[in-house]
Length: 122
Image (cartoon, rainbow, N blue to C red):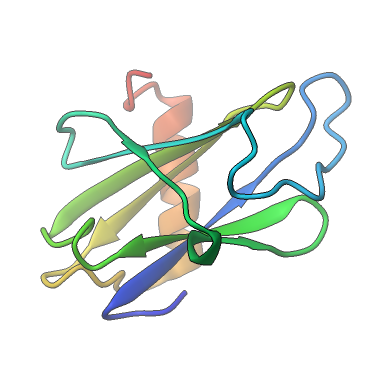
């Protein structure tokens, strides 16, 4: 996670049928969709550029949200959909100025719990 001007958030893509990791997904793949919202507001679709998408290992990816996209403090909810995969949901608190404060792993686990509780409404 890069704090301050830009924020990277994680996602993990796994197949819906056997939960195997999906590797080799590129930012402009037609089956890829990233949606997000701030503070429970309107859902927006993120248009990814090459610099906004980074592949890690075992189906793990990073998504870059700019300062402008996260300029308010509050809650950033995001979800990633890819053809044939289980949708990935994340939720992170944003401090003033768009940085992600505190315990990142705790924030991610809290976001996952929120999804299970149906708080995203997606």
